[in-house]
Image (cartoon, rainbow over all chains, first blue to last red; front, side, top):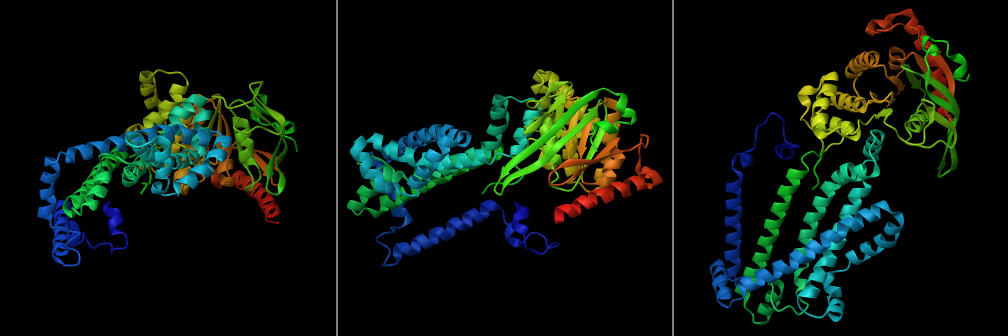
Length: 270
Length: 271
């Protein structure tokens, strides 16, 4: 970590003053600056209506809780995100391997995956509502589609990039097809699978608003839209922040897993 | 100059381990058909050390891959112990130039991979792996990952792993090509020691003429485009060979001869 930070700096010169301050102190400084800016936005006449101050926003935790919405919304969103995401993962991995293994599968599927991947989910949400109705089902389907496309492409790239020499080396040592898959191709692909897991999680959350515009009755994304209709900016901002916090927590967890599982790698993925 | 006619060395009396019979290999490239090997025949005897030299693109790696069973010849056949080669087999081990260690496995587990493919139980393999690592003097690094090792150490692990499969024939594709001169010399010495001790048959590809003469009993010079055996040179310098061997007149004469032959081929390729 330090090595990268030092690139381009004079050798011999020791750690800069910025490195001498512990990480957690920087985190506090960063938070303080953000709060300062937020407070500034909350007093400026042009932005004060959109950005109520922190006390009002955090006060709205109680408001929403008392209305019985807060936990219901978090629960509902987490439920559709995790179901859609898991469905995306369990379908993306085998199909990615099939695409890498069998050329016909690849030639038929890949162009469509690339095609649909570039369409914003919000655009096809109405079609899914017409087909699947309203409620939990279309939410899951929207998140599933988005996660599947991203994860499938990422894992597929990983499988076709497995070093041919490693497969040859295994074969001359007497490995059968099954050994090669389980003991070579699969571990060689883990870094890409974990990257897919991380990208998929991020896609799942960013698709949330689109997913919950399918006539959802609860959910973080749905609530933001409905609070917008009643001009309640304090709880709205609270919900925006909540989505961000969930995103950061998930990412940290996956990054931790990545470090644990792929420490053997020569270079790191970004 | 076919291979069979020139088996006049001390190895000539030994049984044939690998028989390469009129092998032709053609590839279909963008510019039409490319003939990589054009009728290569060679008998490799038991416990023999053979080095193959030739300019890049002369098909020496292709030949090695065919013997290993990783490529199929277009025409002709390869036999190992009298049986036709139709795919890979553990009696033919390969050491690759790029080491080809599994980066997600520790040094010890890389060697265990070979042992487990042979059917050893995990516990047995764990113990046995240490013997092979001791052979290449890397027991201390058993629990390191490949990324923590230098190039020379990685190649020693690869050699230990190849030995762990207990092959009769070791096929080596420029294994020391990516290493610095000192490490290369050291690994050459180690390789000769293990070869003499374990009675393996070695088929070693190199572009380094010094390396070929120091190691081999017979040096095969290949011509380029299409790849053929141009000449087989017997190296009658007794083992053990050391760095001093390189000062002897015999070595220098051989080197001049082989080098001029290889250089001619190199110029052919340049044309």
